[in-house]
Image (cartoon, rainbow, N blue to C red):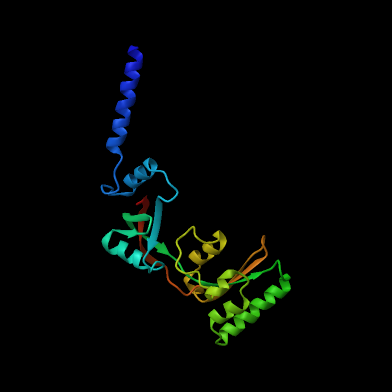
Length: 206
């Protein structure tokens, strides 16, 4: 009986300690506290979101960058957002044309790259060339990657874009031989430091 009482007392004390250190949404001030909150309030709707100033131009993003938190009221739910961290990240941007060597032979792929390169040098906008020749979905975006942080692109394409020498800031090509993929890259953007925010999002039933 004595051991049972000691166990119950210890268990109760542990629960009270957890309640004491688990922050409420209102008291959260940083990402660590936000993670504690998520751990204590598990739900697929409760999560972190990262916004950056270049790629996110919505009213929600603007409000969060300026005020730090906001609430969106729905018919059945209330969604609350709170900034828990602010930082800057180096982003990169380029335009590319992808040629799939699995769909055409190597000789045809290399010939096509020469044709595209000549058209570009003759004044045809790269955006039009990407729409016409690129063999992936990014053709619909004129071959534009948009601003991206490391870890967001195909590793080999990303490595080339990030590490390309200043002397090759114009059009250049490279091949991933193991995949038979060919790229023409227009790496005309300088790296850019972009402000980002990490946001805690929670959904509450009304």
